[in-house]
Amino acid sequence: MSLEFSKKLAAHETPIPGVVLYDLPVHGDNRGWFKENWQRAKMVTLGLPDFRPVQNNISYNEKAGTTRGIHAEPWDKFISVATGRIFGAWVDLREGPSFGTVFTAELDASQAIFIPRGVGNAFQTLEDNTAYTYLVNDHWSADAQGQYTFLNLADETAAIDWPIPLDRAELSDKDKAHPRMADVTPMPAKKVLVLGADGQLGKALRAQYDGDTSVEFAGRTEFDLTRADSFTGRNWKNYSAIINAAAYTAVDTAETAEGRAASWSLNVAAVAHLARTAVEHNLTLVHVSSDYVFDGSRESHSEEEPFTPLGVYGQTKAAGDAVASVVPRHYIVRTSWVIGEGNNFVRTMANLARRGVKPSVVNDQTGRLSFTEDIAAFIRHLLATEAPYGTYNFTNDGQVKSWAEIAADVFEQSGASRSDVTGVTTADYFRDKKAAPRPLSSALDLSKARATGFDPADADERLAAYLKSGVETA
Image (cartoon, rainbow, N blue to C red; front, side, top):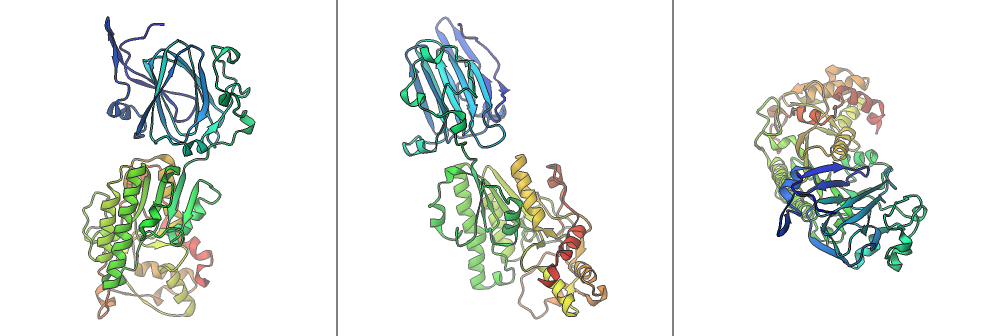
């Protein structure tokens, strides 16, 4: 069979999710041929995942009929033929609805195929002196073989139609002993690690991912972000993403010497450790930001607005955002006025209403509430849809209100009177008090979040449901 020259570089989807067959341009003349077997820029532009290969392996096979597999490995592979021709067979051995899906194709030197982690790989040589070459994005080790998943080449469920029958092919004893499909343990998906899992947002993420065994949760006792050794005791190869829901949020205490150190430690130094880990292991980093990175001088803040933090807390959140943004695969979710399970403004106002207290509340700081159930759902949406990486503003939708207006809403829905809440300026409220400066406008532009296909729930509707849940007596 002669090699086809001068094909255009092209990608072809297959029935197995993530498995893509590529045509490679081969240039030849009377002397032989040349091809770009792997060209990162062109192939990433074509849609190949930027899987960052670290090792190149070659399998040389002297005789036609040599058959190897079916091996599902814990890394991604980019496979091609250096010389000769093969019949390739791939079986999805990953957990999920596509488990057991089969794809076969004949490959020569003008083709290549990308095989994601967990998809079983096998080939049979169709010519003597065939060399099968592959790039992988992890270093092979003897220990790694314990993470392989295998399927028997003769499995009746996969029903692969080998060009050379297996009883006439060259197989290893190990490959002959691999299990049938019914006895295969599917390869589990890579994990998502949620840090800060005991905070308001962390608890909402627990609820959002309830029952999903691919998501792992760690509070401070399980993963202390301020300790360097927290990052060294984990096999990051088994993870795909980190969601950082931990932060130092004591805005006023951050202005003290002790608070300043703690805020920089958790909001910046720890994020630097996370960013380094994400870069080294090609992970997606989801980092939660704050409206405090802005001074509040604009009516509405877009993702492109330059940082203008007023106090230490805002400065550390801005610095953390800058660090997280260097991770190639990052989502920075910028939010404000967070309400969830735990101490928060709505809970405080509901309890004051119940006790008959008539508070003074600032009326010149405006924004929208962000309920943690919706922040968690948006984070899940970004990861599940593989939305474009970058920074996204996210709050609940609806009318921009002041803290005093929201407090009045809480009082009214708690059975008290709106008039029990007295509006006061920020300057008067904090007069003679040690307090951090606050942005007067915290309203965030939500158009970029909506463009991902996520429709933020109305803040007033969420507030009513939150209060009806019995939070006022908590």
